Each structure stands twice: as C-alpha cells, then as structure tokens.
Length: 599
Image (cartoon, rainbow, N blue to C red; front, top):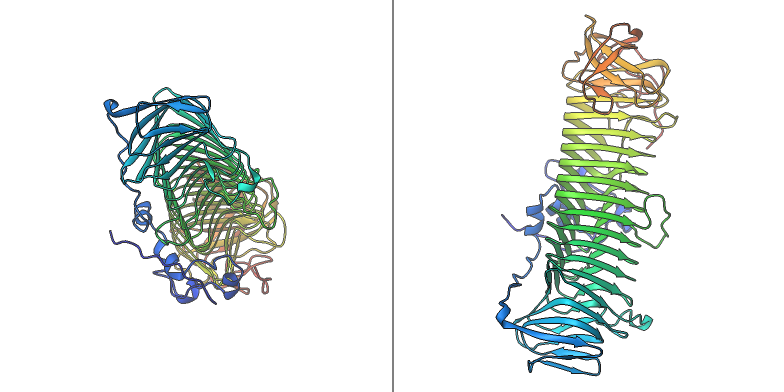
C-alpha cells in the first residue's frame, strides 16, 4: 500500500480547489471565511485529500508504526523488589533506595510488590527494555510521579495475573508544566499489558503520560486525573484491556503536532469508557477506530453548555477521524465526532448524541459502510462535501439533518440508507446534490421556515429511492432534469403522525407505502418505477406491511384508502428553483411558488 503523504501547512484563502477525486473545483472548495475562522486553519489541502474516504489501513499507513517492544520475560530472570514504607529491598545492584526514591539503573525485568510512600525511578542509560511487573504494588508519591521512566530504551509495565495495583502522585499546583507530568510517566515508548488491575490517580496533572508512544495492550485499568487521562505524545494505541478514564481535561490524547506522521490515537481492541471535562478522544492528527469499543461522555453530555473557549467533543482528530470497525458511543456537549479535515466511516457502529453537530468535518464527510445513528443533535451531519455510498444512517436534528456548509457544497448519494428526522431542513446545501442510488427518507419540519429539501443548486435524482415529507411551507421537489421519475404533492392539509400515505399508479397499484413519522403536508417520492408523465394518486388510510425504513414500508394495501390528490410525474415545473417549492401542486407534479429565502 502506498504511504499517504501528509503535510502540515497553513491554509490561506480558500482551503482547497479540485481537491476531491470525482468532484469539481466548485463543489470541492471551501470559502475563505471558513478557513479564516479557524475551523480548518491548521489542515492543508494535501492532508484532507490524503484522508478523504480512506480505510483504517490507509490511515495507519500514513502514520508511524509503534515500536515492536518485547513484553515477554523469563521468570528465572526476574529481579524481586520488595517495597516497604519509604524504602525497598532487592538483591540486585541495579536497585537502590534512598530518601523515599527507589532507582533502577539497568535493563531487565523487575517485580515490584508491597507498598511504597515515595517514587520508583527508572534511569537506565543502555538501550534495553526495562519491564516493571506490578504484583500487588501500591506506590504513592506526595510530590511527583509514582513511577517515572526517565531513561530507558523501551518501557513496559506488566500487570501480574490476578494482582491489584495502585499509583498516585502528589497534588502540586505549581507542577502544571513540570515533568514528570503524570502519575505513571515515561520519556520512552511505553507499553502497559498483563491481566491484573491498575488504578492510577493523577492529582497534579495527567494519569498516564508518555513523551514518546504509548500502547495499552491489556489489564483492567482505571484512571482518574485532574487534567488528561491517558496521553501518548507520538501515538496512543489501544489493542486490548478494559480501561475506564475520568479526566478533568481530555480523556485519551495524542498531541504531537510537529510530526505529520505522529500525534494519532488508534483503537483496535479492548474497551475504553471515558468521562472527560474536555474532549473524550483527541488527536493532533488522526483518530482511528478499527475495533474494540469506545464509550465517551464529554462536557457532561448533550444537554450541557460549553464555554466559548472550551472544547468538549467526543472524538476529535485535527486531520481526520476514521472509523472502520468496532463500536463508538458518544454523548457530548459539543460535536460528537469532529475533524478540521475529513471524517471517513467505512464500517463499525457509531451511536452519537451531541449538543451541537453529530458529525462535523470542515472539508469532507464520507460514509461508505457501517451503522451511524445520531439520536440528538443541532445539526446531525455537517461538512463542505458529503458523500454517502453505503452504510445505514439514522439521524435526528433540531435544525438541519444534513448540512452542506462552506463554499458551494456538494452532496452525493450513491448507496446505503439514510433516514433523517429534522426540524430544520432535511437536506440543506447552498450547492447542488446528486442521488444515483441508495434509499433516503426525510421526515422534515412540522413548522414553517424550512423544508425537507433545501438545495440551492437542486437535487438531481438519477437512481435510488427518495421519500421526503414536510410541513409544506417551503417544500422542494427534485430537479426537473432528473433522469428518474418523481412525484411531488401537496396533501391539502396536515396529516398526523401515524397516517399511512400511499402512492398509486394509474392502474391503482401501490407504488409506495409510507407511515408518517410526524405531521406532514407534502410528499415527494422518486424511484425507478415512477414514470415521468404518468398520473399518480396520493391516498391515505391504507395499510403498511413489512419492516419499514424510516416509515417507508416494502409493501402495503390501499384497500379502504381515500384519495387526497393526483399529480403528474416529472413534467416541467411552473416556477421556483430546484423543481419548485411552496404553494399548491402544479400540473407538472411539483410545487409552484417564487424564490425561496437562502439557507
């Protein structure tokens, strides 16, 4: 696989032009206002292009690979270190104890047992691996880190089978910028593994912190920190274990912003439950989820306010967020998933609740697979470019369901299933949209001032199944030049939730059956069996059958149904933009009316 090139250069003026393969320069551009607002100011066009729609493998290929550290050891080679009070005893010359500090000065494997009121320091000048096996060890320092790897080729902490271990540092408010800045601290690449348990309390700053890379491979680990919970500067990788983090700052973090191939968080296994005052998972470059389970509550959850200068997002990757497996559950006061660059979902299950956007990407949002549910949001999906080619999406928003922001916007739907419940616009763009496949069901607003569709450049439907309802005050039908037939009808009055509405062809056969998810006054429907120029009746009072998709059922009977109106499919529209909007149905099967207000 070719390594993806990522450069970290500032954006000036328009963020990108002709950036995304298959998109025009107009559709792919972001306005200078967006770039200058700080939303995407640190992410270059090259970076966004490199992570648009990529898989987990693609994303990992663009980043440094964690060092292959040997965590295994021979019991015959283990050095025993007995901790007691403010001292320790050992038969090894590489272990000394003085004034509450136990110092290890050579590579090797050391088993720590007992209780220490002080600190364990690793100061090994050679390039070997130093393994600390914690076997019922309780280490508490009143002034600094409980364990500090100050010099080692590589650092390993092994949690002995069945053991219970605790680490805590001193609450020194003057030590915010000092190092060591974690209860468990390392200047070398650090691996934490084993089948025991570890409770870490970061009273001064972070819980677990590495100035290089950090891998969590095993153990039942609980971290409670006043600032960040678990932080690896070059990378933070979870491949196993059961981790619970409570943090005043960010929960899981990698913050190397100087190296474009570093500063990432990768979850491939294990479980991580994070409660954070700041961001749940934060990366200077990429957040990548390929397996395991991540549960995040940030900023108190979706119902909480966020200060103007604070960030309380669920998953935040400055360059990208890539999900290709595993499960992600987020309840965030701010965006549930956020990137200043791109978000790509190819697999996995995401369940999101947000006080702001469900998924926000400044440049590009691509969904090609997986299951994505946004149960609560202001705007459910927001980006300058949105591409849906697969997956199952079910999103709820108090404003827009899918919002194309910045530049001219570009919405492309070629597969998958998208169900939208929005009290603003269902699909909203100042640009154009194209649908060539998939299924889209929009339950639009029940109030005035918005519509199920609001695309200034129109929505061209050349394939797939589209059903849209709204209140009728600002309704819009597909573009007149759509290759696929469509019908658009005003129903005469608002029908209540639960009403079964059906589209019948001129032979009385049921073409579509929909159960209203909330009150509705208009209906737009397009599918491959809708013939332009043919007459269709809209009826209510029939029955639906089969498992529905957002209310759209696979079958139904119109027996006993009453006709609401009839329309002609796909004829020229009498007025308006993008197929017409507002007012009574015209002979063309669309909506008459004058120009609409802007988005």
